[in-house]
Length: 133
Image 1 (tube, rainbow, N blue to C red):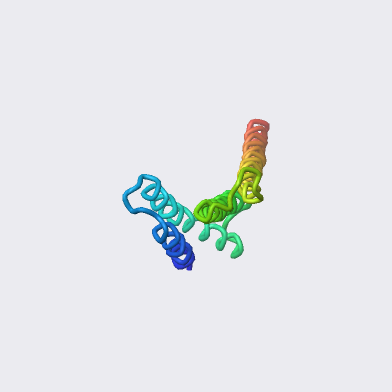
Image 2 (image 1 turned 120 degrees about the vertical axis):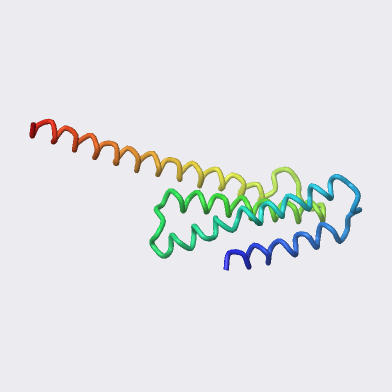
């Protein structure tokens, strides 16, 4: 399912890039490579989000995967806006880029809180073992 979503978004992106551009320019080559790599990165992110809804992944990985998916969506919309020259500085598309960073920060915060709990639990067990001796 993740591969089909990735390919389903990659094909139209490549079509729009190659449809109105000169094949030999460096801008077209980079514009073609960028969505291809994005489509490879989105596959594990989609799998991680699906695993969260099945209860197999914790909140940290879910937020990181959602951040990657948000970045993928922002890159795709940015690319399409760049092609038809409707993108401008201050566009609402930029909010998706910022949301990506917010989700990644909350994912890191969730990881730090989880790590602190595990470390405290391990430290408490060591103190109990010392008392027993």
